Image (tube, rainbow, N blue to C red; front, side, top):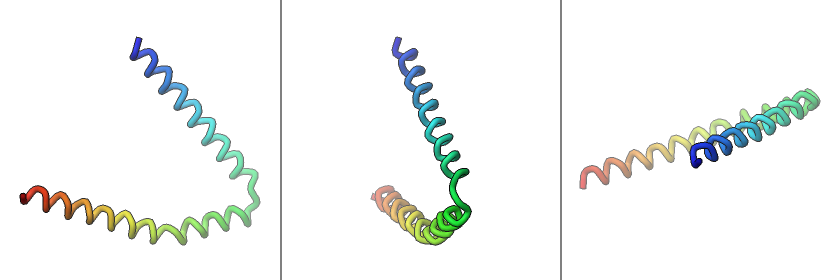
Length: 71
């Protein structure tokens, strides 16, 4: 019974996720080219900042792992 419910939940999640992505693609397709360029420029501008954050988090996690293993 439980596995059937989990399967149903997974199916509904996949369906809703698919519908969200389809809606997003449709909105993007209808968007003007200037708006698309602005979105792309904003993403490119944020990319280095996000990369620094990921590297910072990664190095923090590595430092925590090495200090806890040496104890």
